[in-house]
Image 1 (cartoon, rainbow, N blue to C red):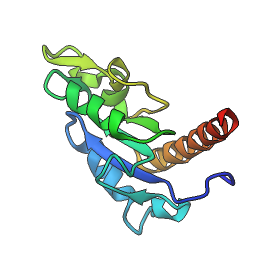
Image 2 (image 1 turned 120 degrees about the horizontal axis):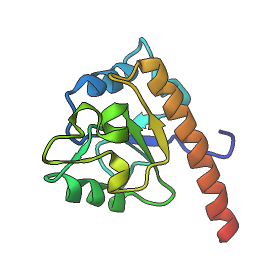
Image 3 (image 1 turned 90 degrees about the horizontal axis):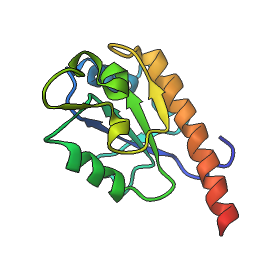
Length: 144
């Protein structure tokens, strides 16, 4: 993560989860797990976010919201699917209104499976997302 010149900002969006993974995302921000030690800052504005953490599967009501959040993020950007529902649709995959995982709507860079995701796995996934962000930043600089 040497090439990252500023603290990466993350934004969390709950697409349609049972809130188990959301609780674990919030747990990572507490002093017990302290994901901020990696320089990560939580934001609520997609225009400031570098990494989008999404929990839950995509349903018919939030497809446009997920697309809009993704489009509002500046390049380079990384999307992480958090939990079984975000990765594949999970236990809700057969529901009438669930399209499936997040990758059915927007490109996903990191998959962090689990039901609910353990905070340690979530932190590993965020660190992996930081590595992906670093590679994307280097590629953008090469293109310029």
